[in-house]
Image 1 (tube, rainbow, N blue to C red):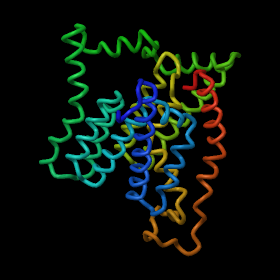
Image 2 (image 1 turned 60 degrees about the vertical axis):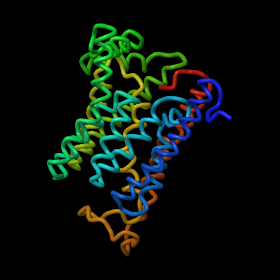
Image 3 (image 1 turned 90 degrees about the horizontal axis):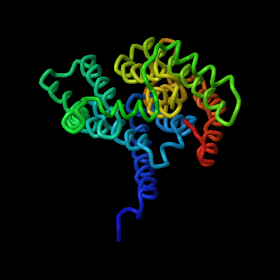
Image 4 (image 1 turned 120 degrees about the vertical axis):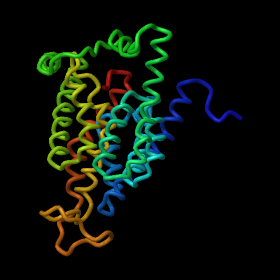
Length: 298
């Protein structure tokens, strides 16, 4: 009896669903590790309510990437750098975003004060990207042949950010079946820039590198393309929502409560996730229906 169904499509669906389950468990554990207690389910809810969460379950790479990247980040936060490096290398085999994850791990290592003898592990996540470039150099004569193919197929050539904004804005003011997608792209860009500002304010430098480099690349493309889908990979956003939604998460000074004990008189913790769900839940439903209708959905 085969382990996976016959055919690429059903096999891809099975792999994506399994990877999504691994990713949600890892996200919950990461949120609980960073605290406060109870943040895990809210962080998972924030992921599943994101507008493009349908791509976690439809045979694409987002779920598989997160299934490696989130455990890698949790391992790094726990100081287990061999596991973090190997998992991040696996994530780099799935998506080019793994290179940004590798850079973020370097920053995490430098800001966490870990022993220098573990620094050699930081090179491991870069190995898949280097090997891919060597392969293209040998077979295609160009180090970045994959990027050339991407630009030829989708046209995301780098431009100045105001040029990209103008092109997307023009699409958002038009009419037709896909006009609302351009508007969702604009909203995603605003959310991404806002997240970068918040991470900078909180001095979460490694997460800032991971998200900031993605946002920078996306808003400097020929036009905004797949920003809501890329946002599925921005787990620092989901951690922030989970942290804010946990009961008695923090007082004005940012001090967290004792794990498992809500501070007397603490604010109710459910309202951030409710606001998040009311704002993004309808977009998630609409985007899912659009995808099921075989239309462009990010």
